Length: 313
Image (cartoon, rainbow, N blue to C red; front, side, top):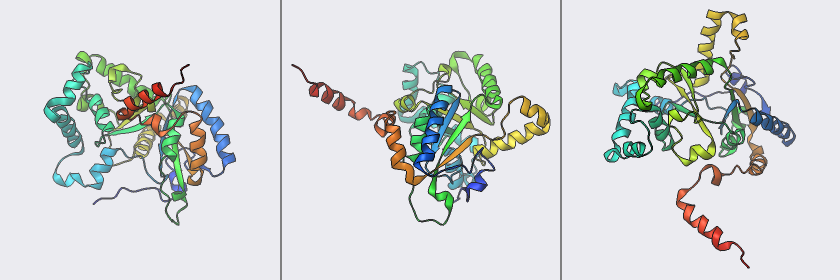
């Protein structure tokens, strides 16, 4: 089995993220960051991703599956593998998903809607989950960290990633994507034609044309996605490579003038011992497991219990 690389130190990580080695170790330090988080929330231009291990690189589930299981030895190309997953998802269980899409006015040739649906049900996709809600992002950082003996400092931390969507690299690519799909009949979005022309693409639930808001988890988690077309490199490395090309073609002055950013995201690393304190803070913002992962199986039971427990004179 193949094994994906990870960061061995926070110093190594700093080569791919703004403030990549930044540590938050104490409650006092966290309280200062909490105030900053409130400010970021109010601006509305940032996207967040929490990760339970600071050492993990930002690979999509399709990259992890493809590389760890060495699928290429089966003589299937990476994007052919993803396209086959989409095609078989369309046909699954006598076209159940297609019929669900048709009932909800989703074009049956909308690859992005299928990828979103597949992502929700744990199938490998080239999408990376982010959220517009900083508190939700932080929850996923501290939700389930691994506590195990280690000699590496980085193993004591979980991470929150912060991406600015005003970065023209993201804004320009999504504008081009929107122009391309606007001329398609009835909301068709083709995987090879529309998605693969972008190395990294920011995809938001705010655009109803994408039809990715198709489950309760995305709604409560305020989920958005980054699409990555690279089969091998994590998104931060693919972004860095793209920025080096931009810098070389534009020159350092124009690169800075246009507002391009050297790193894909800012990274803040939290000591795992802060987990109970952070979860208590998040609860004050109503960020809990029950809210972020609504169990529809409990819908009837919980509503009935509330009604019958209400006091009446």
